[in-house]
Image 1 (cartoon, rainbow, N blue to C red):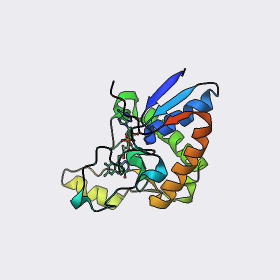
Image 2: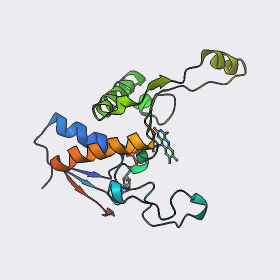
Image 3: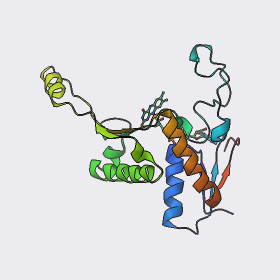
Length: 171
Ligand SMILES: Cc1cc2nc3c(=O)[nH]c(=O)nc-3n(C[C@H](O)[C@H](O)[C@H](O)COP(=O)(O)OP(=O)(O)OC[C@H]3O[C@@H](n4cnc5c(N)ncnc54)[C@H](O)[C@@H]3O)c2cc1C
C-alpha cells in the first residue's frame, strides 16, 4: 500500500519524490517507470539519430532521469520552457526553481558554474527591431556531472521509496 504513486522517473518526478520524502519521512511512495535504470539506458545505435530504430521504449528519452538525463542544462526562467509562471505567478515559479537548484547543489550541482544569458547590448539591439530577447539563469552540468547527480539521487531515493522499472502504465 502506498500513499502516493508517481508515474515516470523523469526529472520532475525525481525532484517531486525527493521533496515529498523530505517533507514527510513516513510517506510511502512508489515510482513506476516504463524505461530502464540509469545504467541500462543505452541506445542501440548510440547517438546516430539518422538510423533511429524506433524502439518502443527509447533509452535516450525514457528511464531514470527521463529526457533530463542528457546534458543537464537547468534553465531558471519564466521566459520559456513552460507556463508555470503564468499559472502561479512569476515570483512563486522562480521560488520553486530556486528550491530545485538547492536540491541540485546538495548533490553536487554547484560544481557547474551558474551564469546568466542576459546581454544588455544585444537586448537593446533586438528591441529596436521589435523583437524580445529571452534570457535565463542557467546551471549547465554537462553529461558527466548530470549522470553523477542522477546516480546519487537514485542512491538516496531507492532506500526510501519503491522504484519499479520497465512497467508501462496503461490505465
Ligand atoms: C532534445 C531536447 C532538449 C532539451 N533540452 C533542455 C534543456 O537544455 N534544458 C531544459 O531545462 N529542458 C530541456 N528539455 C526539456 C526537458 O528535457 C523536459 O522539460 C523534462 O525532461 C521534462 O521532465 P519530466 O519529468 O516532466 O518528463 P520526462 O523527462 O519526459 O520524464 C517522464 C518519464 O515518465 C516515463 N513515462 C511516461 N509515460 C509513462 C507511463 N505510461 N508509464 C510509466 N512511465 C512513463 C517516461 O519513460 C519518462 O522517463 C529538452 C528536451 C528535449 C527533447
